[in-house]
Amino acid sequence: MLNTDVNKTLRDEFNEIIEPYINHPKFQKLKHEIHHGITRFEHSIRVAWYTFLWAKRKGLDYVAATVTGLCHDFFIEEDCEHLTTLEVNKVHGTIAAKNAQKHFSINELVYDGIANHMYPFTDKPSSPEGVIVQYVDKIVAAYEFFISYNPVSIAYKKAAQMFPEPDYTQTLDNEVGPTLSLKRR
Ligand SMILES: [Fe+2]
Ligand SMILES: [Fe+2]
Image (cartoon, rainbow, N blue to C red; front, side, top):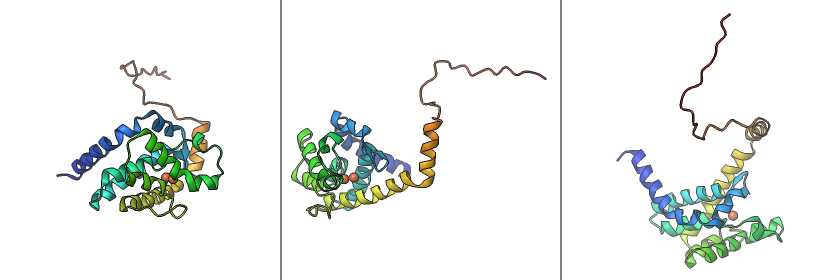
């Protein structure tokens, strides 16, 4: 099997696991929550993806691990309105675990992994799947922080705000190419 086929099979399997969760309206709200300079939606999917790969390779319960990674930051600003930044660091895992328990059907292993992903701010995750999530989260967060807050990215974002790039992603109605009227000199 070619490498690209393997990747596609893995992606398909991963998508099948995460789809029911990411389509939930509360999860969709993470698309509007900024986290390490990107959205919490994007961060959650990245953490879930690398957790999925790592847990699968180790022969662990990779479905539970993936759901743990996906939901580890499953909270929105309103859930933490009354908390200081330090308190958010300590308790957002528990808030996310409670949200996941409320909106999805999760087992104790997943609950524990989500609630304790901020170790050493919290207790140690009690399963190897949870341990993987807390490592992946820290590595991914460091990477996202680096890509978002280095001088080049900051300058680029400023420029993009001043001069937004044209959006070519929409389908054009007119399939006929543009005609340039060239003036002869
Ligand atoms: Fe977190
Ligand atoms: Fe996180």
